[in-house]
Length: 212
Ligand code: URA
Ligand code: SF4
Image (cartoon, rainbow, N blue to C red; front, top):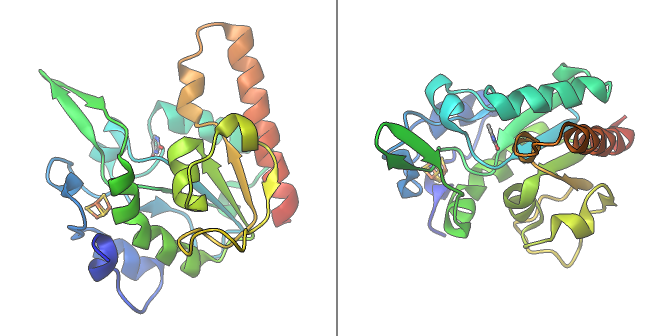
């Protein structure tokens, strides 16, 4: 299988994965990115949060969810009453994909090929952490976690049990799909944004109810 597979160490835990991911060449995204952005959290976490890909800030800092979307996510995790040390945070794709416009770098959605190429890392993380529940933040994450394309509106907020008919790449854990926190940043109306935030918090609470 092409992609990250040959860079994923056969043995070891999260530390070994983090080190190895720095030299991954499983797709072309490493070329233009500053560095790999692997994950944050311990292998003892009970909830695995999966985002899309690192953004501009994450690419520079080498840490997931440290930019504006990360602030929204941290606020939502806090509001849901979830201790941050119980959460493992990662992304479906580990290098920043962007388009250069002058001096600006404009976020570009990862293609399915990138999600597939990067999937061995996600599988290895899942094995190392063995979370009780997985939360997919947005459509890209849902595609990576469930192994198929879903409509967020149709599945969001429910606990989806592991599906025996799912492709073998699906992560075998109860999963909650919700919106990506960056979607909230694009809502101009304050009341609408607040309502969307409340739903995100509610979805995280639903996931927490499975985990502990
Ligand atoms: N958005 C993501 O999906 N992941 C990050 O790490 C940051 C922003
Ligand atoms: Fe490897 Fe994933 Fe980076 Fe592609 S995006 S080079 S598969 S770590």
